[in-house]
Length: 277
Image 1: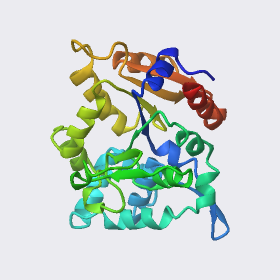
Image 2: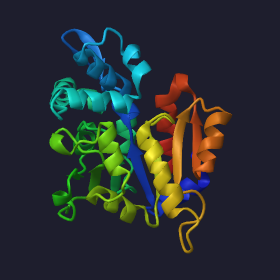
Image 3: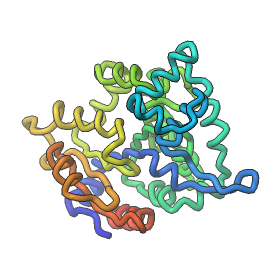
Image 4: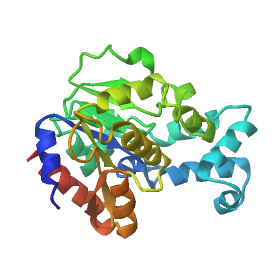
């Protein structure tokens, strides 16, 4: 698989920000209690919420509302807290170093020496651990107090918080509505970082509410402004895209880079390799 020439050029200029989603965490697999496990998907997180709430089938809950509404209901039923979900995530995401080293997508992400800045909406620490295992020194920024303190060779912006700061995690409908005001410290940081740069989304689907939010930001705030970076402001790697994805992403000034779903991990790796070649 090949990388668009414009994206390769932007990478050489240090203008690419990888934005890492749950699909990348799902590429980490390991054995636990004799069972094969991997980083959870967004759907699995919501399924766990419905299980704790007592639904016999997650689809029954989804008839009532969206995933974000289900998580909002979970928070309301637990006195405004999501601790049972963050505790579940913490116990689940105890991947050994070998598992992270064996993730071919993580192996390639950490080789992007032309990228000094990574963004992620994942709550886990797989990306920073992968960078550390590869000899890089990432500074993790999940709250405003961590902004501006970095003296490391790269930064990871945990855009929706992380498990070390569970009170700052963005997970429910009201959390997302608050972020749509574009007025938090992390939003201002993103706005600044986007100036003169483009984003490469890895591990997202079109249904992901994170991407919908970011598309609004790109299209409404940055596209077509005088003196801005020419061309599209974002690229996204999509398994088996149809005209549906191509048209809707194009409307948002996002270039689709297609991969085959049956070989998505190896083809994502090929694209990242080609970008830095």
